[in-house]
Amino acid sequence: MKLVKDLYDSDIVFYWTGDSGEKLSPNLHTLMEAEEWWKREMFARYEGPERRKSIYDRREDSETRKRFERNHKFSRHNPQGRRQTDQPVKVDIDLAKEKIEQIMVWRVASNEND
Image (cartoon, rainbow, N blue to C red):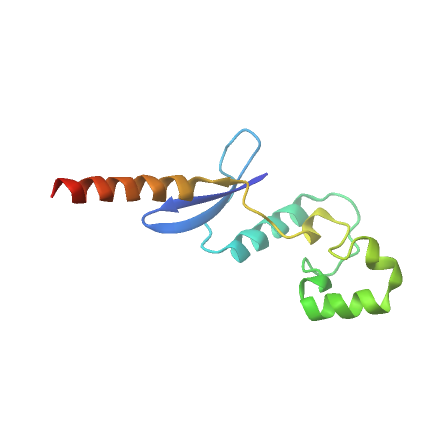
């Protein structure tokens, strides 16, 4: 899956697409909403035995992560966690930037014509 940042009705939105580009999620208004949708989707797709009781990783809270790292020497190899869902999400495709740049060019051109 890829996370897309886009401009829709003058708002920045995020949504997830499949490998072939099909839209998998609704428009989400924040990166945090996009991350939560993705985690729920990944947990729903997992078919093996699940030991975690929550989709949220205790290391997401920076203070908890620091305390965990200090108290558990073995976790220092990967303090973000082992699972893909423990890693922070990042935007893979930024369509909003390109659209905003186009709007700015259009505005400059229309101001020059006035």
